[in-house]
Length: 453
Image 1 (cartoon, rainbow, N blue to C red):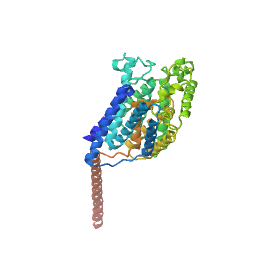
Image 2: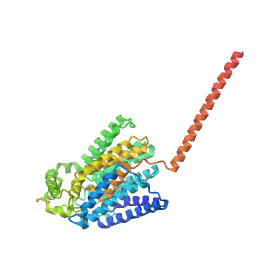
Image 3: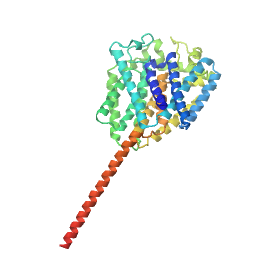
C-alpha cells in the first residue's frame, strides 16, 4: 500500500508539472514540494515498518553527492541566501525523485506503466496544443497571451514553445526506443500514430534548438543500434533514418520554420538574443560573471539578480536566464561544477551502454529511448534553459533514473505466465520424444518380423 502511494505520487508529479505552465510559478513549485514530501514519507514509513534499509547504488551516487555539497556550500556564501536556499531545496526534490524512481520501480510491469504514462501525457499535451492553435483555444486556463512572445508557435500547456519542444524531444525518443520491443498489429499502429503526433507538435513549436536536439538524439540512437549485437536489421535502420529526413524536409518546407530560419539575421533588436552574434555577446557577459566568482559562484538561483550588472548594452529587455544551462549552472555554483558534470555524464553513458547488451527487449528499448532523450536535451541545453523548467527537469530526472536503475525483474503475473509457457514447452517436448520413441519401436518391430519371415 505505502509503495503504491509513493509510486502514484510520482506519477501525479509527472502529470501535474507539464500541465501547470511547466511548473515555473511559485504555487506550482510548492505543489512539487508537497507531493515529493508525501512520496518520501510513504517510502520511509514502508522502510521503517519492514525495517529494510537496503540501498540501491547507482553510478551517479558520488557525482550527485558532490553536486549537492557544492550547491550547499555555494548557498551558504551566496550573494542572495534566501533565493539560493529555495533553489537548493528544489534541487534536493529532483534528487529525491531520482532515488524514489529507482527504489519503487522494480518490475517490468511498473516500468511499462511509467513509460506509457509519459508517452500518453505527451500525446495529451500535443492534442491540447493543437486545439489551442487551430480551434480558438477552448481552454481559457491555458491562455498565456499576456506573456507569450509568439502565439503562432505551438506551446500547448507550456508558457514557452521552446520548453514544449524540450519536453517533446525527450518523449519522442523514448517512444522510438519502444519500437525495439517488436509491437505488432494494433499496438504497432498506435505507436506509429503517437510518434507522428508528437513529431508534428515538435515541428509546430518552431524551435530550432528542439529540432537540433531531437536530431542529435536520433543520430545517437542510430549509432547505438548500428553497433548493438542484438540489432540485426541494419538496412531497416538506414531506411528509417532516410525516411525520417525526407518526412522532416516535407514538414519543414510546408511550415513557417524555413522562413524563421532564413530571417534570423533580420530579426528586430528585442529578439537579437536568438542570433549568433547577439547570443555570443550575451554569453560573454556570463563568462565575465564566472570570472568574477570562479570558486563558489554567485549562489544557486541568483543568476537573474546578479546578471543585471553584467548584461551587455544593446539589449532591449532584461534576461533572467543565460539561455545555456551549462553556463548558468557554472556561474551560480562555480567552476568546480564542470568536472563533476563531465564525471556524471560519462558514468551515465557507461551504465547505459552496458544495459543495452541485456537480452530483454523491454530493457534495451526503454534504456535506449531514455538515453537518446537525455542526449537530446543535453544538446538542446547549449542553446536554452530547459533544465531550469521544473516539468522538463523532472522528466529528465526520471529518464536518467530509468537508464541507471537495476534491470527490472518479472512480476508475479509474468512469472506465472512464463512458468505456464515453460511447462507447455516441456510438455510438447516430452510428447514429441514419446511419439518419436513409439515410431522407432514400431520400426524396430517391423524389422524383427521381416527377419523372422
